[in-house]
Structure formats: structure tokens, C-alpha cells
Length: 437
Ligand code: AMP
Ligand code: GLY
Image (cartoon, rainbow, N blue to C red; front, side, top):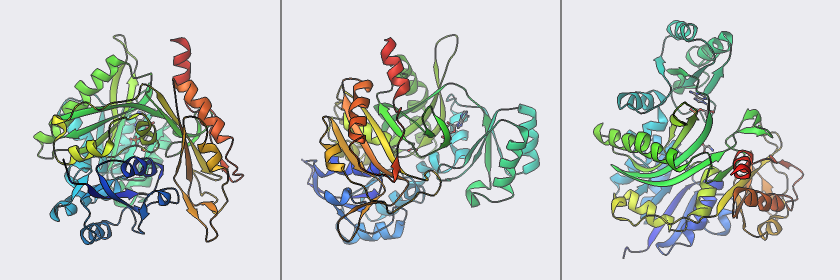
């Protein structure tokens, strides 16, 4: 039996609140601290005011406070080498080292590996030179996708439908410096059509343990309209990912990718979040890789945690220690889970902050519902205030996505927050599929 662990969880969103709830109740946990956390996390764990991207601050805190295991929510610190710095101090981490985190940190790196090992993805080319980039766009035609190479907080991708839009995106990145160093190189790639889905797996070296599929809703408005956000809601499982597609995702994408990273001398340890396009074809739908993230999705993590019956700490520790192959398969509920994200007015532009939220306890009392905090804080007199764009997540389970949706919106309607809004149609694709099957 492993000794109980002092755990430091890094991050401050709904993803981290969902992880914190499971970590705090794990038999493997002695004590949980979260950096920096939020008002909801503060109700179940100690929060310390260290930013999620402050690598030296996080390492220093872990070393001084006898932390045994650091679980990293967001990608920025991983790309900057948090796991490497912790390893130098013999502290275990859930999350890849910098060499492997480049799968998310550099789209050029990711595309080159994927192309070299024959993993299905969009055709692409890399550019630093604006004229060469423009010539490629003209040669290939519209629509076309232009991506800043590095981390750009979800804003680095342009889907251009006219040559003028494509040229503007190229100039903004390569000449205007819109993304700083992250945009000094760009990837231009083929536009893929189909339905998007996300797939999650734990990976240590060659071992790939499937966690399952989810879908999120990126657009801010009902009917998937309006500008993109970090995610307005999600559900799992995603009925678009059939057993056959899951087999292909594992055999044609994730297992070859894990082996490729080992062959390249960059073995991956952590969760892989594959963004996929499910592309229709004469021989049935096929998965093609859009992007790799080196972390759980937010809000996808919230719905995965709602369905995971095994102890996530045991799974994450085995990943960090390279013992995944020895674990029994993870156990999953056969229930569906769905989450609705409540946002502050103004999001995804500048959100209005400081508005008061009431009714959380009433919402959380609805059958099957858990409420997670994302951008919240407490005022000096104990009021719950919005302090970010995505503010609360209402997570519900049910016998299918439709029932989970009904329960989630019943809870949403008990939240008293005039300064907030949400989409009313989370889950519509899955529910349409459930209705015909
Ligand atoms: P990424 O940051 O690479 O995931 O891109 C953000 C979003 O842009 C994705 O979730 C897709 O909706 C879209 N996207 C990215 N690459 C492509 C592509 N090659 N074809 C179609 N849509 C894409
Ligand atoms: N919900 C998408 C992401 O976490 O990147």
C-alpha cells in the first residue's frame, strides 16, 4: 500500500474543482492544497495564492511543504517545464515533461510527428515567410486554416473563407506579432469537414489506457453560433464516437502517437486529449486528428469525472510512476453526464465581474447535480461573486444525455444571477442521435 500523499493541484477552473472533489475524497490523499484555486475549491481544500503558470513559485512551494505529488490542470506550466523542475527535486507530477508537452506547445512539432508516423490528420505546411505562406494559400484555395505555432490561449486559429482573410491572418501573426513569439511561425492546413469530438486517454510510454469520448460546445450562442469560447458545455459519452470509431482512434491515432513519442526519445506521461474531426466517407466515418492537448479539457473533465468510478488519484499516480500497464481497467458508470457552463455577461469578450451569485445550494440539491466553481471568489462579507468569464459549471448525470440535460437545466434555473448567461441547448447533437436510436 502506497503511503498517503500530500497533493498539490495546480489550476483555478471548473476542471480543477471537479478534480479537487475527487482527490479530496481519495483514500490515497493525506492532504490537498490547490494553487491558486477558487471560492468553491476553497470549501474543500486549502488554497495558496500561487499562479498556475508560476513554475518557480509552484516548485518552491512543493519543495518547502513536503508535497509528494503535483497534479497539473492547465497546459502553460507543463509546456514551460514544471514536471521537469519537480523531477529534479524528486517530486512526482501528473503531466508530461516539456519535451513531451510540445505536442500542445508547438503545432509544427505536433504536425511533424503525426505526419512522420502516418497518423491521419489534415495536410499542412509550416511557414515563417509571409510571401511563401500567401503563395501556399492561393495554391490550395479556400477555406483554409491558419494557426499560430505556439500557445495562444485558444485564439491562435483562423478559418479563412476568403484569400483576404487568410492574408490578414498571416500578416497578423508573422508581421503584426499578434501572438508574440507563439506566432513567429504558422501552420497552414487543409480545412476538414465533419463533426468534432474529443477523446481522452492516460498514457505512460507505450501504454495507452482509454478514458473515453466527450463533445463540447465551443460557440457562445445557441445553435453553435457566435464567437468561440473555452467551452460552453460538454457531455460524455459522445454517441458520435461509436465502438468502431473508438477502436480506430486508439489503434490509428493514440497508440501510434504514444509509440512515436517513445521512438523520438520523448516518452509521454499524462493525459492526452485528442481533438478529432469525424470525417464521413464511403467506408464509414473516419477519425482525423485536429490537435493534441496535454491536459484534461475544461469542461470535458467535469463530465469524465462524473462518470469515473475508479479512484482518479490511483490512475494519475500510476501514470506518473509508469505503472499503468499493471492496473486493472478503470471502472465507468453507464450513466451519461452533461455540464452547462454559466458565464458572466460580456464573455468571451471582457466579462462583467463582481456581480453576486445566489442559489448555488438550491441548484446543487437537484437529483444527480453537482455544481463546480470556475471564476468565483468570496467578498469580505461572504457573498459569492463572479470574477472571470466562465463562472460556474452545473454538472448532471442521468440514464442518457437527454435526462442529464433536463436535470442540469432544472438546476440552472435555480441559480439567481442576473449578471450571468448560458446556452440552453447543450447536448443537442447527442440528444438527436439518442432520439433516432
Ligand atoms: P485547435 O486549437 O487546433 O483545436 O483549433 C481550434 C478549432 O478550430 C478546432 O476545435 C476546430 O473547430 C477548428 N479547426 C482547427 N483545425 C481545423 C481543420 N484543419 N479543419 C477544420 N476545422 C479546424
Ligand atoms: N474545452 C476545450 C479545452 O479545454 O481546450
